[in-house]
Length: 82
Image (tube, rainbow, N blue to C red; front, side, top):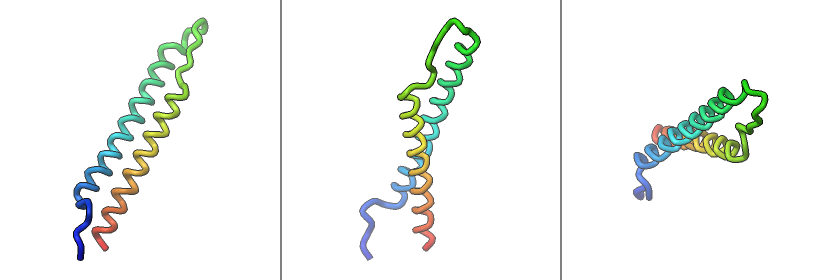
């Protein structure tokens, strides 16, 4: 049998890193939006957009990273057991 190009341990670390990175981006994004709403929603004289296109992009990147990381870890664990 041939050796894999990338060792399985490196793939596991990479996919777990994707999970952690995606979760961190998502949590920070939601905290920033929540802080903006908490600060400006009580004052009707101020019009502030707390959610913009960048918020949507960060949310998408976070979801993509978490999903890809989860699928990668599951695939790697499944391939080790079979």
